[in-house]
Length: 300
Ligand SMILES: O=P(O)(O)O[C@H]1O[C@H](CO)[C@@H](O)[C@H]1O
Ligand SMILES: Nc1nc2[nH]cnc2c(=O)[nH]1
Image (cartoon, rainbow, N blue to C red; front, side):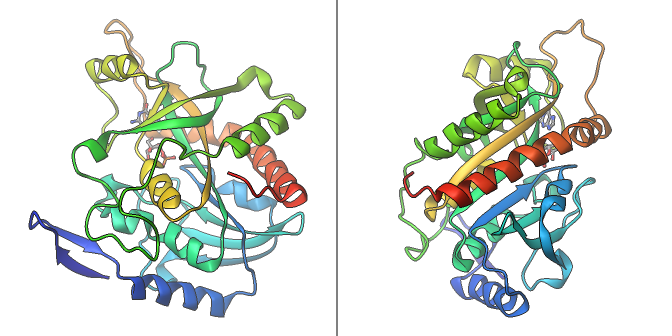
């Protein structure tokens, strides 16, 4: 990992292809698992990894080049295992801009997964509901996103493009795989989740503060259904390097759009809702992985 200057002479911490390779080879030497599916577990959802068997766990601090999780509710472990025979890797906790990491560091694990042979990535997060029809505890399949930090130049693909990962100008109109969205909807219906299953647009803000009411109203006008401080960089880098992506967002609170509302969101409440809904999400994710294993979908 080294510091380099971009064209606009801002120092950013960046990884070279050799850095990614070094970490990938280190992991491949430490584990026999060869995952095809990666799951990024959000704030308070590390439990998703509990469904795996034959687990092998690495602390982020022990993995070369890996950042460490500093956000509360993020365990900071990489867990390899099998779900119904399918080899998977789970990130218990991910990284955020607000922790002070560069977007290159935030997205480093995604490229390592790609080099390890992962084909599909399931990204989960906790978010605040903007769509007035949503309720706390809903699970939103992410149909699309708005990359607000990206509009301001905080974009994980800024800087020299490495063609070994993907093209300079990737398409993002199909970032979230239609097949995976259809499959997860089917699985959710079978599990009788329809009453709290939604689909919508996730917006990333950098955080760390929650939204002002004026900001929340702006997001509603922009067409956002929920808002959070993660996911978009990982999804962008995953799509850039050809991974198939599914995004699931747990609505942990409703964002205040009204000055008369006294309730205020806080991270403890976010974590509490994650805890109460984690088992449901775990069932959905594990059932989905089983189905992927059976069907071995090849189209995007
Ligand atoms: O996106 P994840 O990390 O799931 O968590 C969400 O919840 C935290 C705020 O409570 C922020 O990190 C926000 O992004
Ligand atoms: N920005 C933002 N992130 C969240 N993560 C969980 N809830 C929220 C929210 O209301 N706003």
